[in-house]
Length: 368
Image 1 (cartoon, one colour):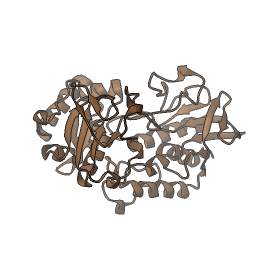
Image 2 (image 1 turned 180 degrees about the horizontal axis):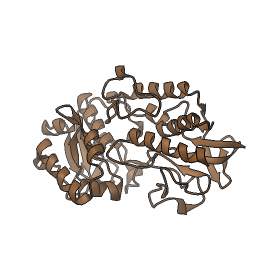
Image 3 (image 1 turned 90 degrees about the vertical axis):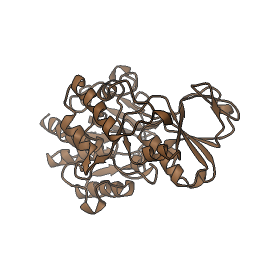
Image 4 (image 1 turned 90 degrees about the horizontal axis):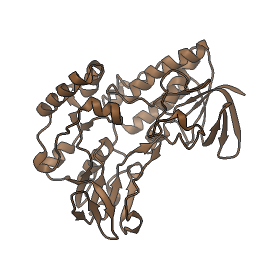
């Protein structure tokens, strides 16, 4: 039996394994992919972190300065590889876990059993792509893919493309398509986004999130709305209204992070990306929209989010909320010997939060 097992070799998993080692506790890290940072390896080519290099490093190793302020996808993967090597972490790749039983006993896809006294689950909340079961979806003759399968605009050159969802991935993919030769690009909006600029006069939005994120909603919400009116043009004439629900309220109730503008506002103003109503269904030749209209794109990119995939691993539904996010996470044990890390969303950045949680959890496990 292994004493400590970490499930997932992303930033949170590697961070807690390194923090454990610094406290004299060895662990085994199981990763379903072919290498560390598998979820990052599979993202679209133009992806850069929306958080600064200085505030995105894991405990014990800063991200190299030469990677720039906004770290590219491939550079982040290189950093995670270097991180695992520096701390000589025992990462076992190709280890897909199919079920977890109290004990803690993990059944792997190859039939092997892995038993551990302490299990740290760090597979992340962007784990399992989710495409809505839109009526008529299977009858549609066009191309439909989840944003997790999108790499670049080249396969869509000359095509009419609809991006469903205006989160950060959807907005960046829409801009990438517009710049990459798509004949036309629409973006379907279900919920009006909170749009912020990634930085203003060199001041990153992440730092504002760190400094102001602790304010109560009654103070933060109107402050954020006022800043947005100064930073972002009024896009109502282009099909994007300002949201009525406060930013921090939506963060608390829906785990929502604001849309960082890295080109989408410019492209909407230039009509290179055209906002339309939310997708409600499909016919064989058309995509139906919430305002009663329809469009006939060649392809639809569903930037419709992810699930954690955790409820499929555990037989105990009381561990999770209705979205599959662990109810107890980030430090305290969810069950004796069971911990979840990397499932909190805040305005300070996912990687920064992973480092904070990693040190906190490693200290708790080492003491126990």
